[in-house]
Amino acid sequence: MTPAIPKVVSIAGIDPSGGAGLLADIKTFSALGAYGCGIVAALTAQNTQSVTGVHTSPVDFLRLQIDTLFADIPLHAVKLGMLASAQIVGTVADRLAHYAAPFVVCDPVMIAKSGDALLAKPAIALVREALFAQSFMVTPNLPEAGVLLDRRPPETVKEMYRAAEALRELLPLSSERWVLLKGGHLPGNEVVDLLFDGDRMVEMPAPRIATRNTHGTGCTLSSALAALLPQYAGGFRPVENAVRHARDYLLKAIAAADTLQVGHGHGPVHHFHATWPRAS
Image (cartoon, rainbow, N blue to C red; front, side, top):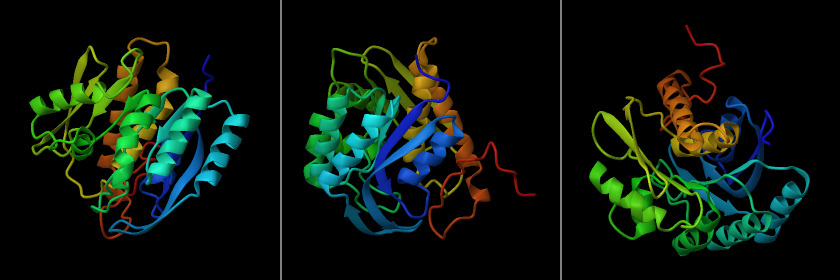
């Protein structure tokens, strides 16, 4: 039985600006009632405008971080973010399989909001072949879906349907696994995400919020899912309702993002919009 306060870990990179990566994940876990743990897969030199450097964790030390944490704390969900290299992807996939980690939410981070690459090309095949095998849910955006499927990104909601079906085929077919394909890159005043388990396709529309401060939206949504999936387990349509809650949290965080005024580029969303006092 999942306790009232689930223990959730993010395996991701560090964004010093706090808008994305491990720091954003911990904020999200905390805002949504989960106890957050973190394993550092990479360090970045990054702000709201660009990524100027990446330093990956030594593989042996990454394995030590994972083994040490899992040996002590019963974890109820895992969020995967920036893993950077094929060696890191392979190590994470191996340890997750070893521990039969539950509710693994894989956000296949490839490109920063600034346009900088965050995943080496040789790692892409390993994400598909090894990491997806351990994932309960994958949450690619449209450019990431194009890379994973080796085709151009979807350009319409109809094409998103076909991409979601193809992505589901990359996940194990014999058990419950989910694709959340995020449609924020399509034009228009509405954003449509698709949730698909291989049988039922759920279309989730939402109004587009006019702001440039969307740094870390993908990290925030996937970590919200990791925090909420254990809390909804056993309920009615638990995955769909966890996704709806996570999206609602993110949309409100985006709507409040302009109040933070962080940096000169794409600023972060407001992870604590529900608890911090509003500026007058």
